[in-house]
Structures are given as C-alpha cells and as structure tokens.
Length: 348
Ligand code: F6P
Image (cartoon, rainbow, N blue to C red; front, side):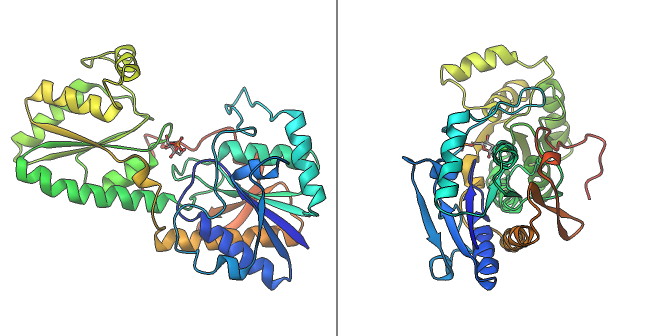
C-alpha cells in the first residue's frame, strides 16, 4: 500500500513527530509513504512536489521543530472558514490534486491541519479521496479533541518568557505586558498566564476595559507587588472605555504606529497608572523550536493512530485525544466551530 501525508496551515512543534510516527507505523505494515511539500500545494502539477519518506529519511526528526515537509497557510487551497460561509476550494484545483493522487498511486491521504486544512481534507474525501485527518493547532481551539500537539510547547515558551520577564520587571518595579498568540481562543494566554504566574490575563472570550486593568494594577502595587505581569492574547478586545477606541487602535496599527493589542495595553496602563511599563510580543517564538516531550509523544501517537485508521479504512475520520485516549471522530465534528475558553469553565 502507498499512502500520502501532508501538513497544512501554520507550522507547529510536533509536526515532525507526527511524520515520524506515520512512517514508523506504515513501515511496520510494509507500506510506502509519500510526503507532499508545502501543504496541499504539493499536490499540484507545477507545485513544490513530493518526497519519499522512509525510516532512513525520518531518522532524528522527532525532536525537531517546524516540519521537514514545509507548509503554508496561503495559496490555492486556502479556504475561508466560518460557520455560515465555508468556501470550497475551486473545482479545477481539486481536479488537479486528485489527478496527482491517482497518478502516484496514493491509496489514502493523511491531512495534518487545523480547521481550514481539515475542511479542505474533508472536501477531498467527499470527492472520493480516502482521507484521514490529524488535528493541528498551537492555539488548541479545535473542536472534538481535548488537545492538539504544539499547544504544550507554546505554553512552555510563554511560561519561560514570563519567568524571565518577572525578574527584570521586579528589579525595575515595572508593569510588563506580554502579547501571546490566540486570535479567537485564549487557551495559550490562559494556560501560559497561570503557569507563568501572571497577575492579569486578557482573553478574546472576555471583553475587558482599560479602567478595570488599570485599577487592578494600582491595587496590586498598593498591596506590595514590586511588579505586575499582564498576559494578553492577540485577539483580546476591549469593551470600550479605554484611551482609544478599537477603530482608533486599528487606524494606528495601519499606520504602523502600534504593534498590537499588547502595545496598546502597555501604553494605556502607563498613562492611566503612572507606573513604568514595557511590552513584549512573543509572536513566532511560541511556534518555533523543539517540541516538549508531551508534544513529541502526542504527535507520535497521532501519527501512529492515523495509519491505523487507514488500515481499518476509517476514512473521513480525524484522530482525537480524549481523556488520555487517542481515538477518532468524524472530521465534520472538528471543523467550522472553534473550541473557545468558556468564561465559567473550571481550569482542570
Ligand atoms: O493559528 C495559529 C496562529 O499561531 C495564530 O495564533 C497567529 O495569529 C497566526 O497563527 C500567525 O500565523 P502566520 O504568521 O503564519 O500567518
């Protein structure tokens, strides 16, 4: 049997562990694995192409960040996602992809991706390509799986940054604002903030006011804090009442006068409290580098499970992690609706 694998969307620590797991499990079954370069683009005749993956080629990749196959969150297969508006990949592009799969004799395709990529994988599956999905997002906001690999590594990067920033903030009695990833979901901010001992965490799921943030900063200093650590998710939004409206903030951003919400919060806190403030945008430091042990193990388990799903011909299904068990769910259950932090949910 000959199977294919591609990863698509933003990269994420643990992708190579998935590839390693897939190749290991497939080799045991005597199967061949073809890896498509740069996501779905590798399926196009004039695209970046493919590579044969065997144990020799994948030796030592388990611990490497990024992906040896390359990936993209742009290009011919990028779909607009949203509950009511799921755009499909153009028919001619799909035809070209299917022709490549047929020509190469690929009998099943593993798609490692987030919401958009799994939606494209599902479209391919509905058009007759046997597809299984592996969930991937450092934001940890995919439905139908309790965890995705990459999230733990991102949280570890945030916690490491907070530990470092804490000591310098304490020395100077400063407020330190740290902007982390998470456009729609605040999981990285929440877990990173709790793990790193942040004093204030601002999430996309709960609108905030600058007045509340400034008042809490003042309270903390009055209570004897030498510094205050604020974690803000990139997608966090204000209820209003800040020094700048959202429109003004967006206008400043367009003129490159303002980096992001973190910088805005920092400037506002300094103005409103008089405490010296600095801001740091962690950006892609959260996505790069080696995966944590947990992500290596989770990625490996996901890869092995994907091969087993093919063996059982369970197509249209996605590998899913629930209560320490790696199982599977229909891909439909995972896409078109993000898993957000519930303001009332307990953190366990
Ligand atoms: O979706 C994951 C994510 O890490 C977001 O949190 C972030 O906004 C985005 O990717 C950035 O991706 P890129 O810079 O690759 O477009």
